[in-house]
Image 1 (cartoon, rainbow, N blue to C red):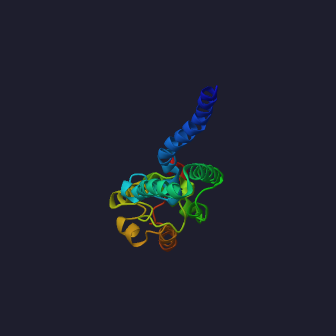
Image 2: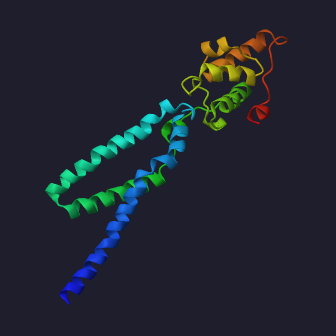
Image 3: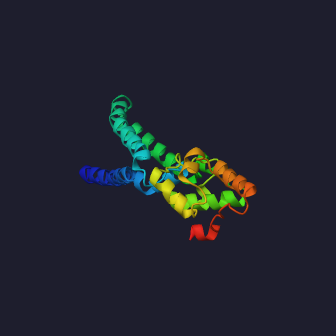
Length: 202
C-alpha cells in the first residue's frame, strides 16, 4: 500500500516538473518571435544584421551564465526552494513583459511636422524598410541603418530633388527638409518638387 501511495506521489510531482521543463524550452525560443519588434523599436534596419546581433548574443550569454549559477545556489539553498523561486520569477517576468509597451526610444520619437518632412519620412521608410510612423524628424539617416547604397536609392525615390552630397552633409531628416524648403524659397522656378507622399508609400 505504501509503495502504491509513493508511486502516485511521484506521478503527481512529475506533471509540474514537466510543465516547468516545457516552459524552459519555450524560453529558449522566445528571442526569435520578438526580435523583429525589438529591432523596429530600436530603429535598426532589418538588413543590418551586425547591428542587432548583440540582442541574441546577450540573451545567450545571460542564459549560459545563469544555468551554472542557479545550480550552485541550489546546492546551498536546496533544490525545491530554488526551483519554486525561479518559476515564480520567470512567471513574473513574463507577465511584466506582456504588459510592457514599446521601448521609450520609439515612443519619444519626434514626428515629422511639415509636409516636406512627412514626404521625406515616407521616402526614408521605403528605403530603410521601416514603418513611416517610426521615422522621427531628428533621426539620422545613417544611424537608422542607411548606407551609401540606400542613400542613392533615396535620391532616386525623391526624383533627385536632393543629391547624394546633400544627404551626407544633412543626414538628419529635419535638416534635409529645411534644405529643400530653403532651396524652394530661393529658387521657386528651379527647385524640384518632391514626389507625393502617397506615391512614396506606394
